[in-house]
Length: 97
Image 1 (cartoon, rainbow, N blue to C red):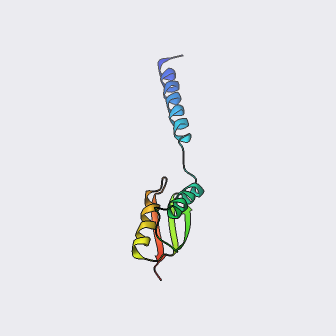
Image 2: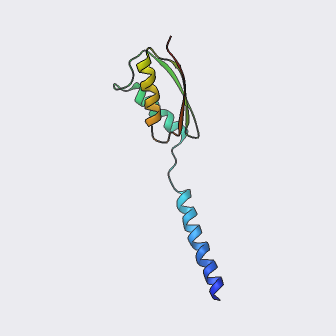
């Protein structure tokens, strides 16, 4: 085996290991993100109710839709979504009746 073939095999091996490492990195499922946000909203530290918030997650992008009783509850719901693990962006369609 000549030097260039050995170098090529070495590079291919390093790239294979790097790709395997990337593929095995943990990615949080959208359903898990939604459940985490729901649990935060329903916890004692969550916004005061009553409120109805639907949580939609697609590829880490969260959409909140529904009714909350106050501006502070709206801010708290958005903040909870933004701080949840795996969230990339948050869109809010929350309204205060």
